[in-house]
Length: 384
Image (cartoon, rainbow, N blue to C red; front, side, top):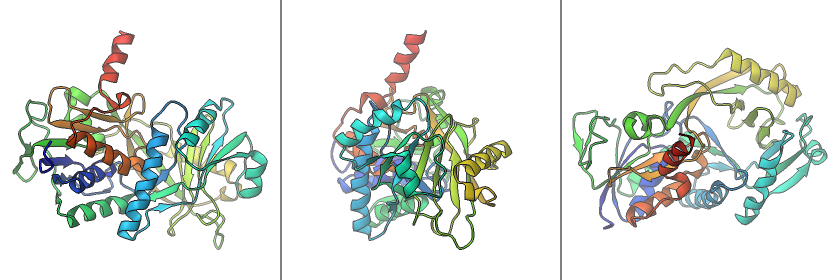
């Protein structure tokens, strides 16, 4: 492909924004579109923070992808003279009797040269006495990982994109005619049309709405409740100065980010919620989920038992059946690429995935099999 091909990228979140920037840096002419703006409150990339980790179990591409993303986050932080990755470390607690996920994570971590330590329960108790490690058998600690500033980094990517000559327009794209081949132009919410040579749709939970024939049943948007609790006055033991980001892999998977930037102690239940409309859904947390999270918080962090709830947030996962991304051409439209299915773990990978997408598009490459749409049809044929 000629480097000056015009490419339209729809969606300015972690996947779309980084894809647009990498395409621009490789010489393409790029127009980036978003309905509500980078890191907006409806987007899967919205909110203040996201976890940066590399523990992903066996037989997956994400540990290696996270290793590349770590390097790229550092590269762009140096270039922009801003910090987005806070390297508090990430502690993964193996609380399940079946620790095959954790055991299976060790080899990929070594192969990707991710620094980590296996910790005994005793070591964890000594290091973080504010945590009740009852039921935790052992842990994995990644000292160079931590949490990312989500909304702020999305905006920074778009700012850099525009600063280098990219065109950003805050407009929505109509779904009408998108699945008709070939795609010649986009109809925008202001009544105008945008013509490009190639189109990348990185619309998170809206991908299925824009492409109902191709993706409507393959990506499901689920409601996810997030809670922020106030730590005891005058104490820093529940802030990022004294506690890492953590994940607790027991019967349910709970995770959290210690208090940062004067915000509360973030806790969430990773269990997939009910189906949710990202456009019109009202973002009110479930009382039942709050009760479950409070019970967990009192158990695992005893000093936080009576902690007040100071903030809540409802986000969504755009979930695929196997939790793998979708990175592929449209099966019938050669000049359309589909990028999504972040499934709650995609944000951290944005810089690396954007780099991959730019290379695929500009060099007419083939995506990894694990991310292709054909995997769904092959699974359906096996079960039919």
